[in-house]
Image (cartoon, rainbow, N blue to C red; front, side, top):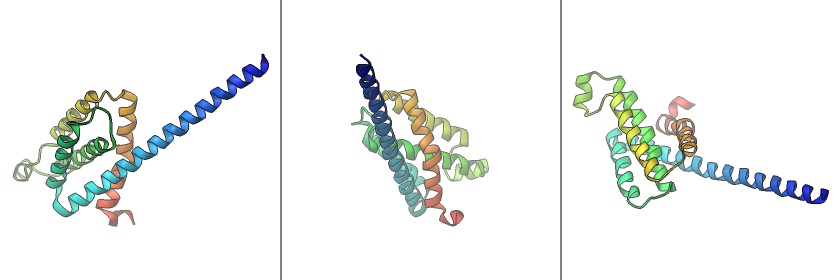
Length: 159
């Protein structure tokens, strides 16, 4: 009887370790995907401008949402780039006068963030991403994604 309890406890412990290892490996893949997406976004913005980076993000959604019913790596790229480019647009917009924003066809910061939130919430609802998964992904983008974007876009600031 005691051997059976010990065996049961060992099996449970092994299952927990395997689950944690799998989750960590999945998180690592997501982090790598987000970092790669952030760097690509920075390269696009640096070479072609913020408008092109925003346009590529929108094209990504158009391409990926028609096929995605789960949170695939390509759809993760779209969402990560949306979070990053929208925050960049919002921060840039805050530094401009209303006339300068209009001349550059930039929305007010609050409008850029609100539109991003609508796109992302809609995407998460469509693919039925759990609130926990959404929170984890958002935190990965906020920390690792924004850092990777900054380092790729403005390397001189990170020396």
